[in-house]
Length: 129
Image (cartoon, rainbow, N blue to C red; front, top):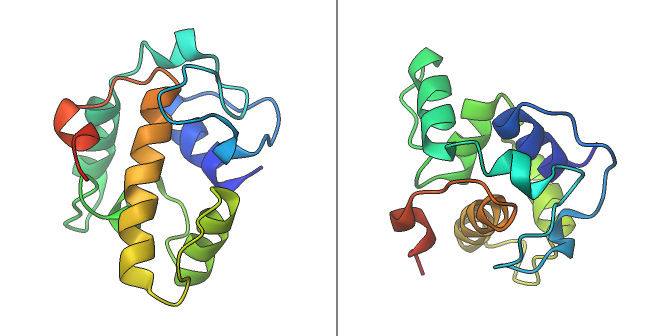
């Protein structure tokens, strides 16, 4: 399963049918990515799910700002190697050695793709530039 597919699976609580390329759906599209139907995702309040998982985590994490913390909240490997693999999967074309820029891009891209799949994402997270 793709890393982004794992993210969707953890958030939406359903196992993606196939490891489709996560970068395939353009931002703003309501097309399902990695087998999660948009109508099923629309019923999921992303902030509520992630806040609940965050409360159960012994670490103090800020998933709303940090891709590392977002991955940790979901129980997904947040290592630099895994983040680079996620960046490649989502077609990051920036400098892979600039992890700060890559991390910001990853966080914004993951949030945008979750929203594009119909997930309910807080407006303040989508408004980030």
